[in-house]
Image (cartoon, rainbow, N blue to C red):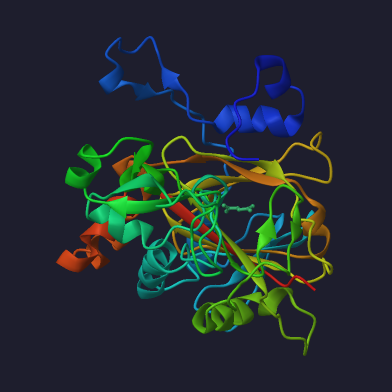
Length: 357
Ligand code: SIN
């Protein structure tokens, strides 16, 4: 699902793939032979739906495009829906700047902590404090158990006689064996899962895996945001969440979120950091998708029929002009926050929260 590079024939087979290819980051190889100065190929964004402009126009003169409806909930921003996509809701700028910043901090410090799993688990087992270790320039090294025994006891973290642990760069120089800088692992962090843990290979929730509940503040936020897409009097119950991390050139291929028991309950999807293009397709990949911008602070709800629609993220914009994160630069300017700012200047984080049962 993540950023797979398709061969040419495959990448043009369906309307969804063609749209992904249209918006994906490609470099203009003719523009410069100097790789350091490689330039993104220009992309035509005129067809990309911009809910911020729709909101501004609506605020100014009450006008809306014919295919957009508005619900005024008690959020600071109106909730937009699309006539031909029942169950899809867009709340531009739903998250305050403070909330965006606190979610960025949590997404980097707390959410990837065990027992929450990340894409790194399969190779390295549980990794603690990745963000802090990266900040300190640490290196993850493979270490063998002293007596070579496969496992030293129930609480021991050696697996098959080996484990990974962080050491300083200096210590790493004195060792032999496999190693990887924490900063490289942070750059390659693609997902972490909160609450009930998702098994990607089986594409289901593995309730037998150890897990913590979704943090209370995130739970309360999701319950509040889910309201426009919930039947009256029914409260959304957040049970699982996937946090997606995107760096330059990363994409999320077209997919359905169909592993939850009750599709009438929405997926609450929060955007943080650099601006992205989101593709909302139809029930098959043959249906031409609608492209729209997702900015930091925007919230999308997908419930009912929209749960059956293919969707994905073919592009994030990390250049200063298009990332549209000036408000985060100002808010994260304190010395303690510069590490978060540095990350988010070239990244996007998506938190999508689900009711599983
Ligand atoms: C998803 O569809 O799972 C994530 C969408 C997003 O990144 O906004």
